[in-house]
Structure formats: C-alpha cells, structure tokens
Image (tube, rainbow, N blue to C red):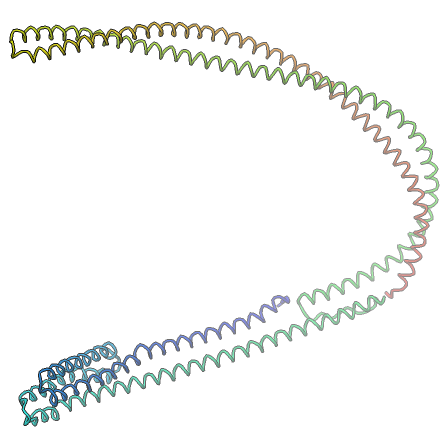
Length: 549
C-alpha cells in the first residue's frame, strides 16, 4: 500500500490523538465517579451525621428539662420554664427524626432501615415515659419533704432505658454514616489516583509514540534525500554514467528519486543528440552565409523603389483626407438641423397636448357653471317660497292684532307678539328680496362665463388644428433632412473608406519599406550571427565533451 508523507504523518499523529482522546475519556469517567461519591457523601452521609448529632443533643435537653422540672419546678414560673424547655427539646427530637426519615425510611440497607424504625417507635414511648416522670413529680407535691421515689422509679425503669435504646440506635446510624463518609473518601482518593495514573501513563505513551513516528519518518526521508544529494553532485561534476538511484519508499520522496533517474536518462540522450546536431549546424551555417550575401544585394535595390512609391501614396492620402473632412462637416450640419427640427416637432406635440388639456378643463368648468346655475335657480325658487310664507305670516299677524283688539286689555300681550311677528315677516321678505337680487346677478354672471368658456373651446379647437398643421410641416422637414443626412452619411462613409484604403496602402508600403530595411539589417545580422554561431558551436562542442556519457 502506497502512503504519502502527509498520510504517514496523519496516521502517526492520529494515533497519538486517539490515545489522548481515550485517556481524556477515562479521566472524565473517573471524575464522574468522584463527583457521584462526593454527592453521596454530601447529600446522605453528612446530613445523617448532623441529624443524629441533633437527635442526641435534643434527647439530652429533654432529659435535662425533666430533671430540672423535678428538682426546681416548685414555683409556677420555674415550672412553666421547664415545661416550655421540654416541649422545645422534644420538638427538636421529632424534627431530627423527620430529617432522618428521607435518608433511612426507604434505604436499601435493611439494618439501617430497622434502626431508624426503632428510633421512630422509641421516640413516642420516650415521650410517654417522660410525661409519666413529670406526672409522678407533680404527685410528690411542692413541700420540702417531697417524695420523688415514684418519679425516680419511673425514670430508671422506663424513661432511661428508652433513652439509652434511642441513643444506641442513633449512635449506630451515626457510626454507619461515618463509615459511609470514610468509604466515599477512600473511593474519591482511589478514583483521583487512578485518573492521575491514567493521565500520566497516556501522556508518556503519547510522547513516546510521537517520538517513534517522528524518528521513523525522519530516517526514511533523510536516507533518500542524502542519496539524491550525492547523485546531484555527481551530475553537476559532469559524470552521467552513474547507476540509477535505488527507490525504497513509495511516498513523494520516492517519486522525487524516480524523477531524478528519469532526468539523468534524458540528459544522456540530449547530450548525445547535441553532439550530432552541433556538427550538422556547423555545416549548414557555411551554406547560409553564402545565401545571405546574395540576399543583401537584392534587398538594397528593392528598398530604393519602395521609397518612390511611398512619396506618391502620401500625396494621394492628403487629398482624400481633405475631401472626407468636408463631407463630415456637411453631415454634422445636417445632424444639427435634424435635431432642431425634432425639437420643434416635440414642442408642437407638447403644445397640442396642453391645448387639449385646456379645452378639457374649460368644458369641465362650463359643466360646473351650468350645474351651479341650476342650483342658483333652485335657490331663487326657495326665495320665492320664503316671500309667500312672509306674506302669509303678515296676514296671520294682522288677524291676530284684530283679535287682540277685540279682546281688550286681556289681548294686549298677544297684540305685542303679533306686531313682532309682523316685523319679522317684513324682515324675512326684505332678506328674501336681497337674496333674489343676488341670485339674479349670479345667474347673469354665470351666463357670461359659460359664453366665454364656449368661445375658449372654439379657440382651442382652432389652435389645435394650427398646431397639427405645424407638426405635419415639421415632420416633412425632418423627413427631408433625414434623407439629406443619409446621403451625406453615405458620401462621408465612402470618403472615409477611400481614406482608410489609401491609409492602409500607405501603411502597407511603409511596412514593406521598413521590412525591406529590416531585411537588409537582418541579412547583415545574419552574417554576423553565422560568425557568432561558429564560435558558439566550438564552445558547445567543448562543453559537451566535458560530460561522460
């Protein structure tokens, strides 16, 4: 299997990388085990130790409170203090038991579960015995000759044994927790040590593997490179008879050695062919020198004739250029005239559109004025109705005044109102008359506006027709100018083509003249080059003879 240098490096250092990854995974799993052991120690064992210590302290407080109640509970204040102290201490006992319940209530260790169940049952019995001791103490009375024999008997036969059993079970749980902490610490230390050993071992192994890979690759590369260097020095000294290099690797260095062998073989062939070619070139150069002298004489005669042809072509070129310039000037003038004609046609088209827009606006305004006149007619009709209503109102007011006069004093107030109504009717009639006059004036003005708008529409139609005739004239002018431009463009194009043809002719003659001069110079240089080739051939033959083929 052929492996390149890159593949060899990749396999070697890939193995080192895989080893380091495996080592890192092992260390990671060890750290996970350490974390689990630490969590077990902190979440179970340490909490169990604290709960057991709190339970033992609470038992001591409970017993102390009962003893204090027996010895010092003569007064009501002391009795109340020790009662409250007993209650608080026993509550601490219950709290400690409840803290132990999630740790040992469902534990897999049957012995620890039995111990916790025993403590849970004994706490209830312990409370009952403590209560019996205090009841016996109350029965002893409060005098100086109190008899505590019954209370002491209850304490020694019932309370203290329960307390000792609770202490024994709690201390057993505490000892088990201490052992769990010790075991967890040992497991943590063991995992930590294993991780350290594994990390150190894998690091040393990775370093050793890297050194081995680097050494093997270096040796395989350096050996072939040294052989190549020796071969290159031999070739540089002119010795082409060395045997081919031995290829021991299949990588890029082996390809380089194979290419060196091919290069040496090719150089041998080239040097052998160069010797034969040098002899042939020496014979041919003598023949080329004779032909070059004959060619030089012929080229000098051709150069003299070309100089006369070039002068005549230059004069004809100047004449055609002047004609082309004048044709171009006429063509440019026609372009400018056509442009201005098109601008005039655009202006007439814009004028036509604007006149049509003015005509449309005038018609729309006329329609609006007619509509307004119709509305003003309706206003006049409404004003006439107001006049009629005013007249009727005056008659009604007059009738009301007559009826008020008949009524005498009782109708005076109604007469005043009738008179005011009549005055309002007169004012309404006068206002209606003024409105009617204004409406009449507005209608006359509207009639005048409509007449003017109709005149404006006729004028717009006339202007539209004039603009259209002007536009048609501009189109004819533009068409004529376009024809003129096309004709001048064709003339200009023909003149330019003739000018270009003459220019090309002059350039060709000039090039031929230059080529003939260059040919003369080249012939002279050929003569000199042949002499130089003879000298080079001698030098080349000497250099080729230096190599041993």
